[in-house]
Each structure stands twice: as structure tokens, then as C-alpha cells.
Length: 288
Image 1 (cartoon, rainbow, N blue to C red):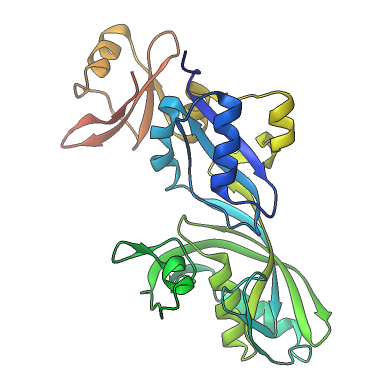
Image 2: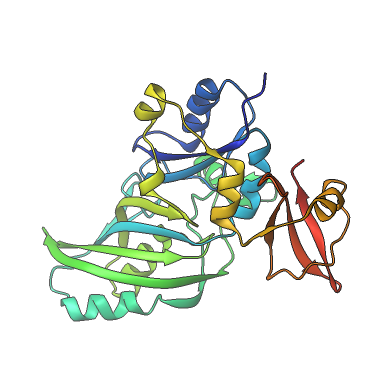
């Protein structure tokens, strides 16, 4: 018997991959139908949103939402992966850079920016992951892409030997690489930079307050039901029975919607995601 569809919000520990987390949740949920909304590097910790059964189809839409992170940037050391797991490429004394300059340069990353992803990313280049090409000894040149950093707060700037460690928090669009911000800030300051710590604190409306560790899930496996997950992530509209019947077969609706919207039947069951298009509301994904 298949489990009820829903989301599992995991607080991922350091040192394991997102695929390791998926494998563990598959065992706990008793199904192979488990997917995730955006990976976290092995070094990173924090919020990883997984879908079980039909809720896996929600994940592609959730991946478009805002994300939030806490991170520590080390200025004065550049690495091959733009994080602490890579090979050190160069070291440059950075302790003499004043805090005001560090804050100013990091502030320049707020807003709509063009960002070149880190070379060891999961982006596909001619059908092959960029990180695999790097591991195979290839030179990878990725194109800059538009991303948005909604907010970047510098909490602390402190010496770390000849380097500087900078604690930051940021809210950004999906597809933003925090490692690339560390790299680029270090480059602008002329000393290089990389991430020594990264913790994702939120994916859309799902934050650490609803996340559970793998140990906690092993003791008591709990999911956010798909209806609750949809109401948390999207505007919600409750339909009458006639409109709900139309949704079940994917018909357009004469109902005004504010954008991508979760629609529900009179009993509160989640039916579909609809959006306004061509003068009516039309289905994006039907879940029944």
C-alpha cells in the first residue's frame, strides 16, 4: 500500500549528500517515490524538502521559490570548489582589509545580478554535470545567469590568522550559488574567497522550525500532508463541488486567480495547481 502523499522537511547534517537523505527517507516511508526540491552540497546543512508519492510533482514548482541561508565566507583563500572541500588554489593576506570595505563589497551583491555558477555545480554542460567534467580533468566555462539576492546581512567580520571570516545571512532566488558570492567577493577585494560553512534556513515557506533530523524521523516518521504543504506554499482557493468536478478532469475554470494557485474541493482535499491564462484559469498540474 502506497503511503499518503506529503512533504518531508529534513534538517540535513553535514558530510552526506542529498541523495543519501533521499535513500534514508525512501526506507522510512516504505516507497521509492521520493524526490527532493534542490540539492545541498555534502558540506552544507539545513532545510532539504522531499516529496513522497504524488507530492513529488509539487517539487518542481517549489524549486522556483525563494531560499534563505546562513554562511561563513573566508576571505584570503581561494579554492577549486569555492568551498572548504576544494583544493587551495591561492592564499593572500586579507586581515588588513577594514570591515567597512568588506561590508560595502558584499552589499554590492544585493539585487538582480549576473552570476557565473561555481564550476563544480550540478548544471549540465552538453548532457554531463559540470562537477563530473571537473573531476574528469576538463576545463569548465559556465555562462553567467541572472539571479536575485533579495537581502544580504553581514553579522560579523573577524580575523582568522591572515584571513578574514565573515558571517552572513541572505535571502535569494532559486539557482543562486552562495559559494559563487564568496568567490566573487574575494575576487573584488583582490584576496580570493570561499565558503567554510553553509546552512540553508528556508526553502519557500518551509524553514528550520518544521524541519526534522534524520534521527528524529527514524524515531517518529512524520510528513506534512500534501494539502497542508500546498496551502503553505501557494495562494489557496476552495471550490464548490461543480468546479471541483471540472478540475478533476482538467477543465479550465471561470474563477479569477492571483497567479499560480492551489485549488481544493469543498472537503479541503488538494486537487490541482491552476494559473490564469488566456482569459481563464487553466491547469498546471492535477493531483487527483
